Image (cartoon, rainbow, N blue to C red; front, side, top):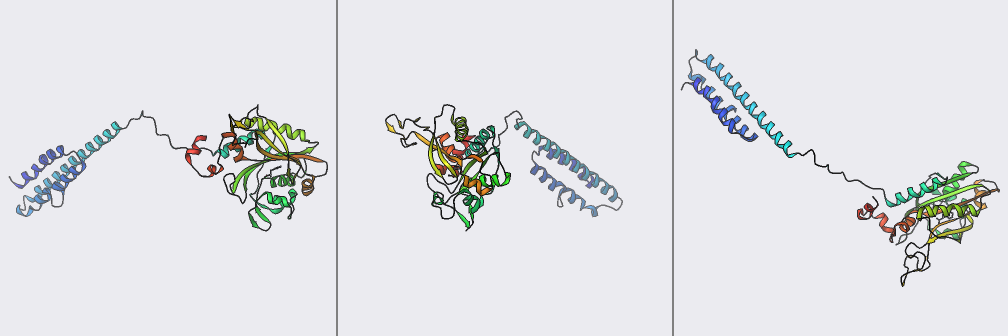
Length: 345
Ligand code: PHE
C-alpha cells in the first residue's frame, strides 16, 4: 500500500472504532490515537521525505482532507453521544413529581400571642406605639412616682447602664413618653416590647415581653377599666372566662389592681379530681395582669392637668402565652428548640 492509500485507509478504520465508542473518554482515546501528536495521522505525515518532490503536494492535500474528515466524524460522534446523554437525563426527570417544599420558619409563640393581644386591643380602639429599651431613670422610675430611695424600686431588679440610664424593667415608661408627646388627653395607646430584669430562674428570664396600656381622658373611672379589661381577657381566653379584680399596689396607679382569671387547669376548683392543682396552687385563680387608675403624681410629672383621669395596665406576654397553651417552663421560650417552636406553625 502506498502512503496515500494508507492515509485514506485511516478514515474507515477511525469511523468503525468511533461507532463502537460509547463514552466521552473512549472518543478522547481515539482522538489521541489518530489525531494526536504521536497519532497515526502524524506518523504517516512524518514519512513525507520518502516521497518524490512531485508526489508531495498531492500527499499534503490528501493528508489535510483526511484530517478534516476525521475531525468531522469525531464531532458528529460527540454530538450524538451528548444528545443521548441528555435524553437519558431527561428520561430520569419526572416533571410531574411534586416539588420538595422548602423548609419554612414560623413565628415565635411570643410573637403570635403579642400580635393577637395587640389585635384585640386595637379592636377596642387603642393605638400601638413603641419606644426605647434603654431608658432614662426619669422615664422608667422617677416620673412613675418611684423616687430614688423608694422601697418599691426593689420590686424590680434593675440592670443599670449608668447611674441614670437603665434597661427598662417594664413598658410603663411608655406611659410617660406617650403623655409627654401628645401633651394633652384624650389618648388610648398600647406599647408592646422587650423589658429586662436582673432575674433568672424557672419563672423569670432576664429579658421578656410586656404590653402596656394607657387610656387618659376626662371622667374615666374604674368601671371603664373593668369593662375594657374584662372584654379583653374574655376575647383572649374565651367568653365564659371568670375574671377577678383584686386590690394590689403599684406606685404609679391609685387604686392598684391585679386581674386574675380562673385557673386553666382546674377550672377554678383548686384541685383536679382529688389532687391539689399545681398550676394555681389550689387558689383557683391565676394572675394575668397589673393595672389601676393613673396616679395624679404621674399626671403632674408629665404636665397633664389635675382634671385628667385614666387607667393603665401592663401584662407579661410570655406569661399569657404559658396560660393560653399550658406551658409550664418559661425557659423553653428562649431555647430555640424546633420541637417546641414548630408546634405553633
Ligand atoms: N409595670 C408594672 C409591672 O411591670 C405593671 C403595671 C403596668 C401595673 C401598668 C399597673 C399599671 O409589674
